[in-house]
Amino acid sequence: MADNPPNINVTRVSTQPNECLIEEQLNIEIDFTTDRTIENGVWEIKYNVDFSSKRHIIEVGKSEAKRYEANVPHTFSHHVDKLNLDGISSSLLNNMGLLLATLKDGSSEIFQLSCVVQVTKGENKSFIRNVLNPLE
Image 1 (cartoon, rainbow, N blue to C red):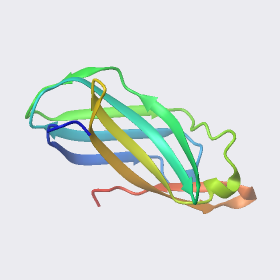
Image 2 (image 1 turned 60 degrees about the vertical axis):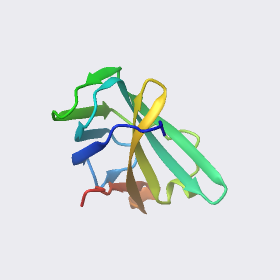
Image 3 (image 1 turned 90 degrees about the horizontal axis):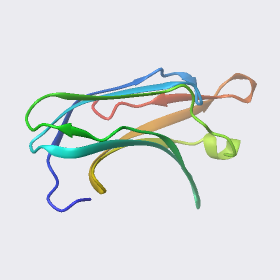
């Protein structure tokens, strides 16, 4: 974390769809304000699958650098057509995960939003995801 980072106030988080196959498309929106201007704000989205001593971090996406003015509402949104889970064993996928949205200013991490992802077994050896909203 950066020394003395700006305060980020998240007012809304939306992840869609939910109750779907784990690898399906993902849309994430985060409404927020910052108390200081962020000159080169970049959001990085990752999905963290962690079980015992095995950890896989899946890069979901990254935004272009953007200036976020202080004390005005902002919305970050990101869409991926499919989560690439190739090479991750089913035993790892059948666990809780974390969807991480990290805001950086240049190379300094200033904020991280963590959403727990519940994973359950569906039909035909599929896995169903449900991303929990940290504001609820």
